[in-house]
Length: 269
Length: 304
Image (tube, rainbow over all chains, first blue to last red; front, side):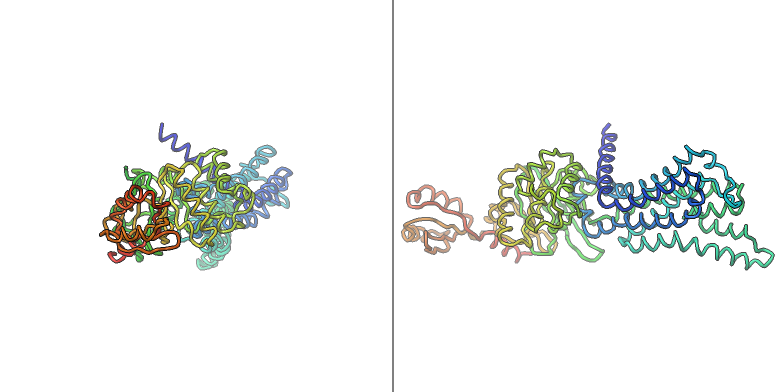
């Protein structure tokens, strides 16, 4: 009874501070998220999938950076002492960190996912689970898988980068990790894939195996890119995509727990 | 009186190198108006942060309201109002910040409005916090600390970096609070005269070590420090000539409206009784002017 009451009070405080952040520090991330959500929803509603597919990587990159730049402001608050002031009002360290994560990471990811899923479900549910022939013969992956891996990558990238930033109390670390995960690894993984294929000899050069290397280099942190590679490897294969979503999802949850645990313990004023 | 704060052999080391508290042990009783006295860097702010559960001690144990402030952080903090030495607020408007604190603490809107009027910051509710002067920032700090009717008020150097008039105002507010609120107040300061008129309990801290703690009247007697009495009278010479022969009187000085009597503080009560009876018709009044805390501090500093 008492435990339930404590949880309720705790959730109430988390909600209060997350709402406060939404109205103050997290505003930029919501402006950005709203614009992108709107574009995604419109492009799906009117069947303009090519907008969706073409700009996915750019949107992802922009979103990760905007979310990181907003979420990493928690590091300023920790370093400057604002966090201590808020804590003395009656928040626990756990509630404080969770409020930041909810307002700057959880909500934007959910909004983006819903903005893509809802119109797709209403207008063309079939596109979520099956692939279809797009313009000029291009066969895009199923929309549902794209949205799922996209949201997952957004979440895993930002959580991973943010956790290191918080533990080391440096925004620059969060930025470097976010850029590494979102840009550097996806760019260099095809090069490595090609290099490995070349190293195996001319007869081994294969578009399919290059994609397999890209898949394995990305499947932990970048499920979206990994899924695209797996799709390129074999559009009908379901094992690799499910493996990607499952492992990245579990990894994301474990990392969320680790982030909250370490952040809580490194939050001595 | 039960102890509201209890430190036992508390050690706090920053970054594995800087020892901020070294086996610190002290208690502060419930409803005391306590001064945490010590020079800059002596460990006062660290002690406050430990009381609030913002820091974890390396060794020793702390109890606040009978709870461990590190593990029972929310239950402890909800009962404490805290004014930090250099409060750093989020860059929002005054009302937004107070609303946040009110909601977290579950206080009523009327309670906050009453406090903002009491501390004269009502007219600044829509100003950005960063635009407030230092004096008004302190008022805001005290206001937010009192939201939710805390049982313990921690004020860390409340008059530091204030101009003389703001300092007087803030001191006046603290004095009023000490009189009106039936709560425990702990003021950390290195400015002794400020505490003289407020505190009834002191904790002396120096270089992270607790030198002495206890009720002021007991400590002043224990260390036989001098007390200074300003006696308002038209017959200073007569009173001076009669009292100078007493053993406990260490000096007499005739001043414009009376005389200053310097005595062994152990005999304060005796002198006050004498002034209220024997000399009642010869004097217009008297007051304890200065000294004993400063002298006590000097004596204790030598012990440290």
